Length: 404
Image 1 (cartoon, rainbow, N blue to C red):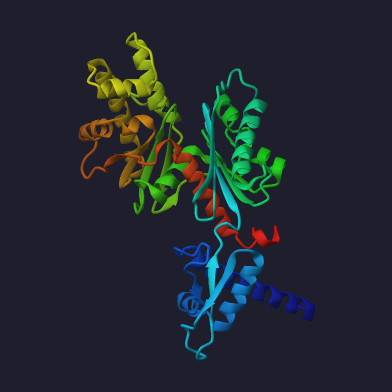
Image 2: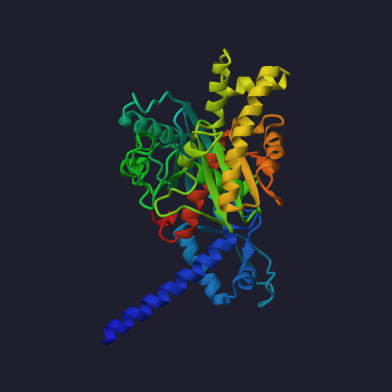
């Protein structure tokens, strides 16, 4: 190897080591409460030395670089708590949660919602629109434009500019499998092709943002693991059961995806006795109500059942029996510790209790409990925010807001 080559390699190793140190410091300060860059809290060099094992000189050098990059702020000095020079003011640092923003999007068939949040996930703006998208009639360009406009409206509300110069990452949830490329790699399914016509690519080309696409049930599982009924559960399945059923599978704390993003897709339910399709609870209840000579949405059936209507209660029993069989297939395949059901019907009084009561007919103990999500209709948006935050944390030095 030439001397120039050796010098280049040494410089590369030094840079990687410096970046590793910077990320260790940044992630530690990022995770501390009360250090949002508002003048409260903060950490000293000694705090960071104890947390990271780095020397004092390295800590302060790295913090100066992170300040330059826009990630940290230096707070007003207090009297020294470090004690290495009597009376010297201690430098204190805080993470700037408003150094940039992330965006989470739920690009559903009938509702598109976008939330902009700071770098600790605190919401800054929410925009949701109802759409009447029919895969057989709606032009794909209309769907793309509706998603783009919704995101732009949320970014405008949060930052004052629809172009969002401070947007560090966007994550879009779609009701379709998403492969490593961010597109749906399975062909021959018109619904999936309509649901994900490269929405990430469209947003990236329009604004130059870093945009990720992911399956909506996968994002729901991330949300449940982050702030919901899956918190602290190493093995869990989240069933997103609105208009269609999809599953996000967390195995030993890691989201399973498969080679082409197909883990958790429910095409096989066409073959399951007593289920017969991947229709979700909303559609199933609506169809059952119609078959019984009534009208109304799934929420109307739930309200009627809560009011004591016998027919509505029977319809919920039928829907619960069907979902029980879906749960049984997933438990048999993945052996989770818990199954979380997300979607409006899941929170109906006594619904998951009906499902739990049906499991002993199919499964030997110990059986995982089925619980209702507590995150409401924005579970996918919340999971998308988590996905975007994870992307920023993993590649923070490349996304430094001070060097955008």
